[in-house]
Amino acid sequence: MKNVRKQKQHKKPSVGRVIFVIFCWIYAAFSLYPLIWMILYSFKNNEEIFVTNPFGLPTHFRIENYARAFAKYNVPRYFFNSVIVAIFTVIGVIICSLLFAYATSRMEWKGKGLFRTFMSIGMFIPAQAIMIPVVKQVQAAHLTGKRLSLILPYIAINLAFSCMVYYGFFKGIPRELEEAACIDGATIYQTFARIICPLVKPATVTLAIYTFLSAWNEFILANVLVGSNDELKTLPLGVLFFQGSFTTDWGGMGATMVIASLPAIVVYILFSEQVESAMTIGGAVKG
Image 1 (tube, rainbow, N blue to C red):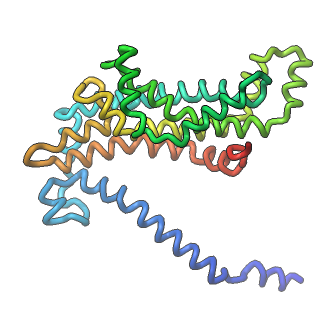
Image 2: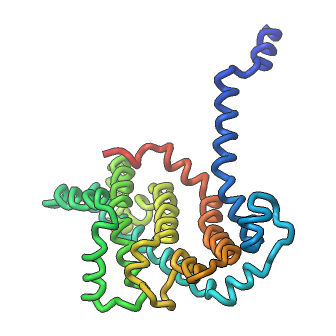
Image 3: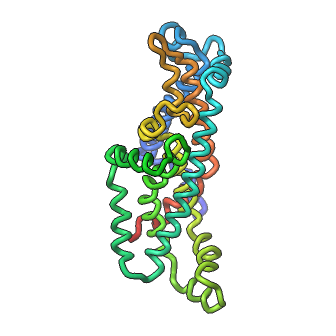
């Protein structure tokens, strides 16, 4: 019996598993190469990027690209604007979607199905189709020239998906938990804050990361709403300033893109386990 167990333990991996592992390594290499190439060319000048050394390591690490990005192209201001817009978008989406999903999944009131259907329709409307109405609404609300002109539309765009995810999680929570809390004397607000919200923490972390990345990387709507207002430009818009009429500072552009990518990478690394656990629960696709 011991020999049989040892043979099973030392059993060679199957051919299919070996092929799958090789495929994963190749896929990882293709996925990471653009990021590595971007980091490398952020330390090069235009001649080295396109002529002498487009794919190799920099012959001389040009730190001045980062210094020029910070000093000449207002990258700190663009970075600050992106952080403010992304953080407040995440806060607004989480609060609004939590309340709406709880009201439509756990409470009984007339018309909740109609409101939930109306909200879910927003998932099928692309942002490009609502640009003109959004601009008109921003102008009518006198938000032009303010960060709210970006934050409020971003909240509205991400709200439908977040509500549907929370709705699926809420439908999977047993109602006996709320009934027990009610018997113990807890109000509906205490039940929501102390029992329901902690149970949907995986969904909250997942949606926070998804919304943060969506707001951080958004370009088209920001370009329409902000325009030439340099005080409100985010990092994706700031990259445009590296393109001149006759020349483009590709090294400085690479440095800016590296700076713009770091927060998203850090956020995902810190919360990757929570995202994976949330995706395996399956509650996000119920209902």
